[in-house]
Image (cartoon, rainbow, N blue to C red; front, top):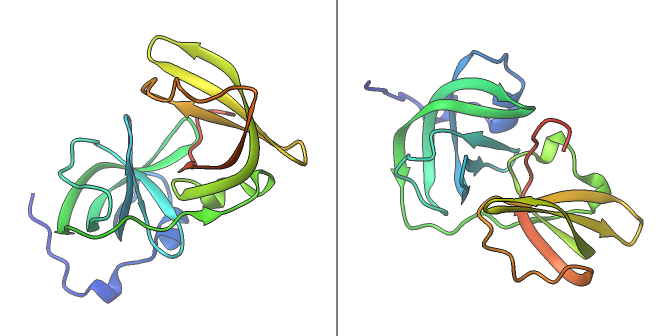
Length: 173
């Protein structure tokens, strides 16, 4: 496939793309915030979106223009069967937004966020993954998923000044 973008000003923001119907072919521009096991997170100043496949030749900090079809997987809106139209490499990843656990919602989906003053405990685990339950000072909770099992050294039942990661959804988690 060959894609031509005639005017980058015509590319909608990610929040505008997120408002379009599942199944729509769209183009987005943003910075790569993370390359996770099952998705790539791309965000601009308005929002974020999960991107598949993860085999795309992009890295954290790259400024990319991508095209693909909007899809919903278990509650996570994603740009599926994505293709890279343009990639400006060598940049820095986006800054994390500092948010309260109680303020995490779908508007922050696929964005890099930091939560402060949390306590972790193990919620569940399996072969190569661990789910942690994070609780803030107000008693709000979120699930933190370590999809590769590389965070096993995290102290459970310990307090953390801050934790940074990508907001995603899987069913009702």
